[in-house]
Amino acid sequence: MEIEAPTRLRGKLSWLMNKASVKAHQLVGEAMATADARAYHFAILAAVEEFGPSSQVLIGQRCGIDQSDMHAMLAELARQGHVERAADPTDRRRNLITLTERGRHRLDELDAALNTVQDNLFKALSPADRDTLAALLTRVLS
Image (tube, rainbow, N blue to C red):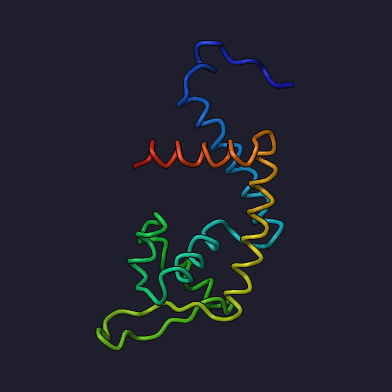
């Protein structure tokens, strides 16, 4: 049984956004666990697919992942065969991260799992409402 929060609190958009974020985080975590993955797998694979081969630093910046965590995350994805590391031909001191075919397939699997989460989380909203919410949140975050 969920205890009702005070009206003044429930009326604060920041509180509602936080509650929605916690719920979304939980559902995404469950979906990724079912797929034997983590949310950062999707983020990293999506960044490499969209922007092409990139440095570890740039991928981390694009995904909002702390650089101290990126090496281990990329090592895990490389062990799984989803990305490859190769020396940057223009700067041998850094590696370029490239998506493999196996990584593309994995990205599609994780994308489908996350689409299901989105559908479940926002089932009370029409497609137009979802588009409006996305536009409003994008404005808030810009």
